[in-house]
Structures are given as C-alpha cells and as structure tokens.
Image (cartoon, rainbow, N blue to C red; front, side):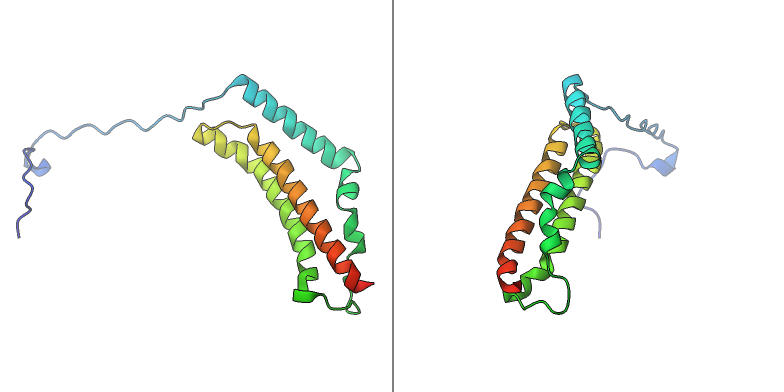
Length: 142
C-alpha cells in the first residue's frame, strides 16, 4: 500500500546531495551571580551547622527515647517502626536535594538557591514528624 503523503525531495540513494549533519548542541549554563553566591553561602552554612555544631543532637535528640527492644509495648498501627526510616529518610532526602538539586538546576537553567532552602525544610519536616511520632508512641512504651 502506498503512502498517502508525497514528498518532493528525491530519495537519498539516487545520487542526491544529502544535508550535512548538524553540529552537536552546546551546553550553555545560565548563571546569575547573586544566585550562585546565595547557593554557596547556604550550602556552606548547612555544612558548618551539620558538622561543627550540636544541632544534630538538639534536633534529633528525641531518638534516644525510641524503644527499640523486643520488650516494648505495642503501639497502634505499628507507627513506632516508622520513626527511624522517617527521620533518616528525611535526612537522606535533604542531602540529596542539597547536592543533586543545584546540578540539575545548572543543566535546566533554573535558579539554584532554592535547593538548600528545600533541604532545610525537609530536615525540619522530618524532625517534626519524628518527634510527633515519638511523643505519640512514648505514652504506650512507658
């Protein structure tokens, strides 16, 4: 069955001149100086806060109250099993957002500085959810 569309171009195999291949695309990064400066300052602040201060023990100090043994009383719906994955998953997501996010933004041409702020927000949400779950479960453990 013949194709319903007719093309005016001659077939390439009949000695017709073929078009030269187009050059490969050039990667152009769109950077704004204030955005790069804010991103570097926020990432440096995050690294200093995570490694040089005791914010980790202040934020996630509630984890020492989590009952992990077999002698713990049961909690409704087993929500006590979700405390550690929620907290550590939030920390991992925050690290991924702070490290991978600016690279993706560089390639896409987006602003960079919202990724460290998103990482801070993810840590705060994981802290809040973990501490609420620990407070809820502690009434059944003790």
